[in-house]
Length: 135
Length: 135
Length: 135
Length: 135
Image (cartoon, rainbow over all chains, first blue to last red; front, side, top):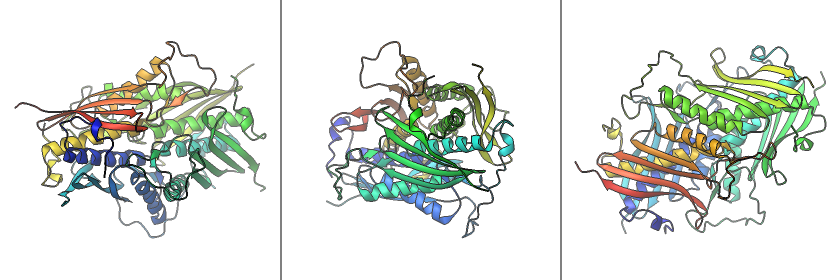
């Protein structure tokens, strides 16, 4: 990895700092590009829309992998979705979106996650893992 | 088709009116859910992101089919994309997005399109076809 | 009004058709640019964010006026909002957004609305008024 | 400041790490909520849309201040904007958006920025300042 934009940051900023900064950028990008996208509760739609989001975020700098799933809160969803009427669909919101992003910057490898947190009633973004890559 | 929301429109509105109204909604939904999504100029990424957008808009009422393609303005794109540096990617804007949506409402079948128009310097949405389905 | 893009539509499309088409575009643009915007339940925030959305949609072709309000479902909101903790805020979704857009195309003046519909559990877009301007 | 979500992060994550993580989240949220919003090149529109974006991002956790401006690349913009035709407007993209966000987490106060970088042809997000608040 060679970061041609490294020089634009404040001189007091370390590689580790930038790794966390970049992870925040990616998780929020995933969250906000997906909000409001129409979806319906059939496995095929949920998978293909999630693949599009993964592929999109994978273009961003320093990203190693992205996993997205769109999970309806009620897991009793039938295998076969039948639309009851034309308005029987939903759109992506913070409750539905689950995403994991792995990123490397300098010697740092981070894993971040966005997932609805019921205690906070909030689509919480967290750092799940932070490891130093042996040189 | 049975529109359970038909009664919520003004009484002076015809099925044909609603067909055009709904087509506008779908084209603008496609446009605005896609703006700012990261993409890069490799065929695989462009296709998978486009499939996600198609599948998403296909959930909306009265939609019969959706075709999306993401077209870089310079067609000389190589078959094999090689990222030159970490920031060597783009994001969806009005120049790149081409979409076609087919919709049926009542006896009306419409085809709409969104595509960058060089004369107007504008991502123009147009009605390409308007036909009455024989009863 | 002079529509320099009129010629790009199918020849079978009338001014009235285009008026409904354009109204659909504007309502869906308003809806999708606002989804996911952070907001909190204090009158000042709700008003300033709504003004920004109104001003934005007012730039679009043929729009005469735009009114947006962001309405928390529980009207017992206090006049004075006090944040209980850092995560005590929300973001715009279909339940909160109420918008009205007035548009003129050719001899047609339309009023459209987007508002959450409890019966349908859906952010319904409707045509509220359709009048012909006397020449 | 008391972060009720602190416990959800990996135990190896420091306050400084979270400060950078949160700053990235906010800059990317600002970027992605604004992409595609219609605007036109008159000072009033640009200011009111920018105020809405500032007020929105100000709701997010740990944010101390937000400054947004929408800058057309050609500074020779007239004081008085006259729309030449109905399609004579634009929408927010990475070239136009300039944002600065100040954030505090634990003992750390950071200033981040998003601004188009001509060298990279990229809407670069940077950490401009990182200071420790004296206890």
